[in-house]
Length: 409
Image 1 (cartoon, rainbow, N blue to C red):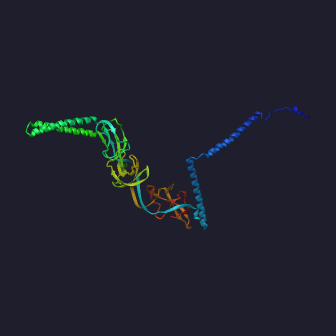
Image 2: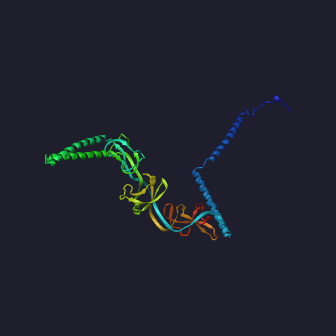
């Protein structure tokens, strides 16, 4: 065998690092090492994202189904134990609170919305034309009846009054002298009558000018607060044009448009439950103050009005109010909270608790017929009777036959 020397050996292939195929493999391997951690990082970030409300609801629904399935299996197993004569531990059941059903009164209300209006509210405007000389009050200032709130420029009227007073003095002197002569049977009666007429006519014109002067003074018609001032000093004021608004919040109207279908159910003097969404703590029974006598042909409603006191002035005009008006009442009927009523393909039902022969409690569906409903309470026509034990807490965790751990009732 011929052994070639080291120097004779020819290198047929390039070194591994210089081979193009090997370089491509190195590139893919490097990319693999970079991409894989990125994929895990993205997946981790995706897992850390918060679920949407819809996904949370779906999971809750799935968990409830699992609870129902588990409760059903537990019920079957407990029934098997009971059939074997074994004691079933009632403490393993769903903890619930029961209430014994007893008849009582029920009142049904229908709700309508209304709006607040001030009993005393006025837009102040002058009775004559003129330039607004001065505004004596500010926005938010409280005023009393007959208090001066603004004045018009009355320089022309004042000058006319001074001139008229001078003419009256002359007319009075002439009249008095003619009267003295007439009393002495001197002169003619016509001269006396003309002098008297001139004097009395000038007095009447003076009173007219003084009335015009008084019209140029704007006064508060009642006790209240200046809510708004619409024009500025120096601007022209005209009759019927608003200068300011004064409002008294001590007493308020609450108005509502009620459908004519409710007309037979409301009488003047009936009390309604008044609430304000802006003041959830307020609730008061208020008598009907006035009912309209005309049906609005556009929306087939009539006006109903309440009147309330407003201590502290917390209620404001145009606030939204709600009326609860009684439409039906009954005595000695079964009434339950509406939130306890559930529904399946067979109809509406509630859960009642009953004891088995081994003195364990179980939940059972009681199918019902619903009657009138209002204020979160429902009258039951059929399906429940006096003495039934209604599940009032823990009912959302129950299925037919679920074992119960009963608190005192």
